[in-house]
Image (cartoon, rainbow, N blue to C red; front, side, top):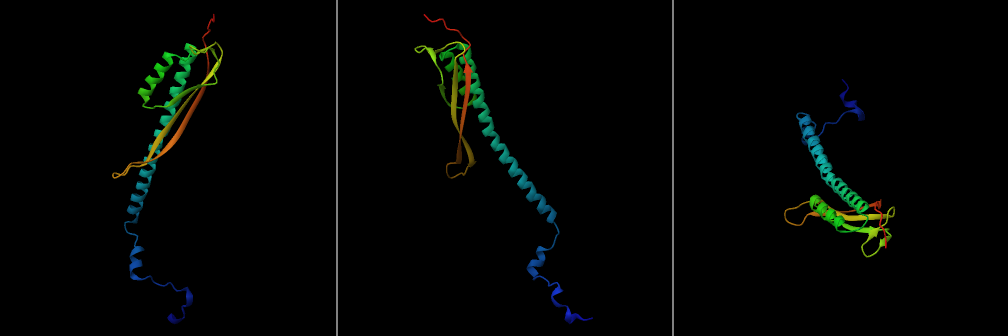
Length: 160
């Protein structure tokens, strides 16, 4: 009936190329593929971050073991360095180890008296690889890690 007076409320039809975009056939498959790719990418990112946490746990383990050996030995001596180098080989890490806040009762042999405290600090820089292009060096972020553990000597030294 009155087709001429439709006014502004009439739906205008889209040009032909845009009408094909409104066709919904197969769109659920495209959505599924995109969602699957996003989930796989997120899972790969999470798995790659697990390497950082594993490295930190290995550094913590190394530091705890070295502290325990120093506590039992009562000195910074060859058994301490043996354990440190063995753990370096086992974990593949090569941290720098320092002994801090220690009062030696025998400076020459680095003996720590019973109930005297000391701190072992290990510092390591983990290289987290973001991207590994085939034509150049990988793009990495270096994550600094530092672990400090305080121990107490369990050995009594009888001094002359």
